[in-house]
Image (cartoon, rainbow, N blue to C red; front, side):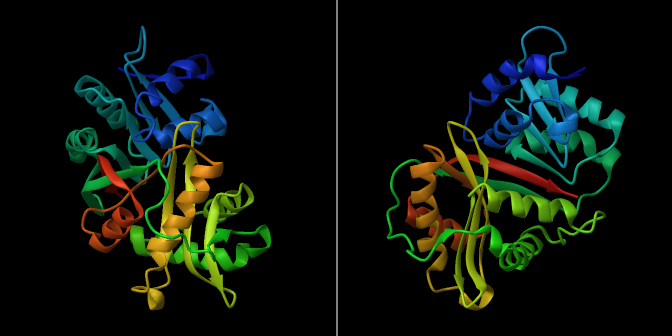
Length: 275
């Protein structure tokens, strides 16, 4: 059975995340920022095996995210998750592990809203192949009220539910504000409204992950995503991390094509189970 890790395990956890720094950037970023105390982390990290050097991890918070998952570890994580019941709103990570984890949990957790079985993970470390949009810039703290409606629209369109959950959106508002205040929120703003946006959600010394890419519906088809992403990548490589990554639904052909034109290449495949 896995054990709940604490700060005494932090060096081992970071070392495991750094084995695949693009794939495991989310958990690597969280533990570097918050340590392993559930109070600060907003969840737990389970380690497998319970004794001896760690082989695999599983972050369990708002999301359930396996790291370096072996088949034996996935079965152990599933057994512990069955005991505790579902706490997360999604399972996300390397496709084989996520789909195996879900196969073992589905009889106990019931049907999800959606299973996205193939989400290409894309990355790049060189300059963008297209000209960056000169109007895309970091969002200022005083523009929170402009940014929030675009962020809500993006989340609702992408996930299928509003981010304003049982807490009335307090946690989501805080996250939008945090990304702005740390200089990781980018947008093109025209006449007081966002027409393109993206955030750098996870950061380690080795990689960062772009999330929340969105173009206002009435401006789609103008090439704003391509040029906007080029601007985000150029600045992220300059000031945030040496590799920029993201993951995208396999059925979103326009987005995948735009990212490829910017210079992104497929490096792995994720899956997501959404509740």
